[in-house]
Image (cartoon, rainbow, N blue to C red):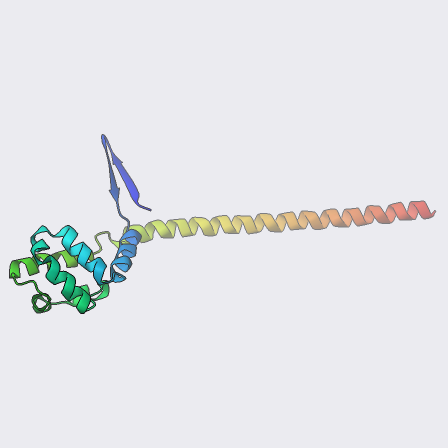
Length: 155
């Protein structure tokens, strides 16, 4: 779920800290073919390496979890020969795993919601105790009335 921020005349969707963490986890779970598709789909300059990347990423089982550890030399071994292309790709990988939203704003909101839930839970517990007390009182009244009825019918 994304936070939507409205400004006069436009609407902008901003990912929350939690959204970005979920995306990072998703990227870490990528298989080699997901890595390949992301590279080819998002980097026009790398399309000339299409078949080479397909073969080398598959052969070396390059998955999302290993992307951040790959060096320029690794990318050269995987078939990207132009250093500028390697730098573009490595910069994109860095951005892919960068969290842009600070956790403090998001954590603050979660803490407020958590506090609100604690207060509501406490109020519900108190209300539950009061209702149980009323039920207990009614039960005692009902028992007393039954005893009086039995006493009157026996006399």
